[in-house]
Structures are given as structure tokens and as C-alpha cells.
Image (tube, rainbow, N blue to C red; front, side, top):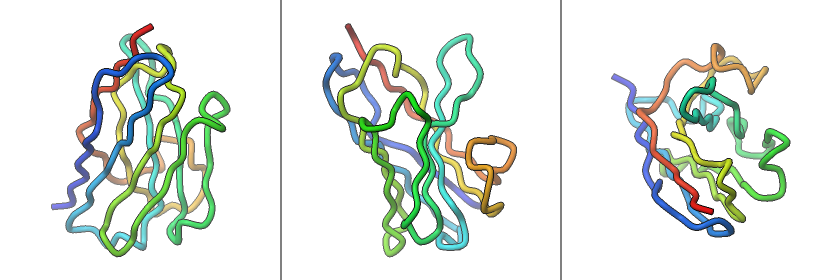
Length: 124
């Protein structure tokens, strides 16, 4: 079956950087837009960023604009989230997701497949 596997999470001090990766398998990768979401304890899952099929257009939630960059490598079936200037409020489990809907990037219900998540912890 389709698998999305995230990696790259960890513990980092505020102001530091992490790069999350998402490896996709058994998926027609270029047919799907890709998104990153996050969920902090006691909070709802939150949209972080999305990239369209060709990797040309990206979308971000306001709180990460200018700090995070989403990208994809269609030749390798990989997606990435480069996170710079991390803040304690970025602490959450980060999920990679794939969508064939083609719009409404911030809506979790529009995503067909999800990874298991990777923990990001930012200390003050």
C-alpha cells in the first residue's frame, strides 16, 4: 500500500534549524500535491505548508512564512520541509500528506494519504 515516511525530527534550541524529509512509495508521486501539517499536544492538526505537483507553487501558513520552505524532488519521490529560526511554539508532531484534490491545501480532509509523523521539539 501507499507509504509516506517522515524523518529528520528531533530536539533543537530556539533559533536553530531542522530539515524534515518525507519518502513516498507505491504512489504515483507526480499526481499528488504534498503538504506538511503539525499537531501539538491538546491542539488540532494544523496546516503548515503545501507544494503543488510540479513543485512550482507553494503555500504556507502565516506563522511560518519566511522561516520554512517546502520543496519536492519528483525524481526521488521525496518531499522536504526546511525549518529555520525555529521557535518553541513550533514544537509538534509533523506529518507529511499527499492530496489529489488540487486545491484547498490547508484542509486535512482533502489529503488522501498520511505519514506516521516525526516529533519536533524546540527548546527555549
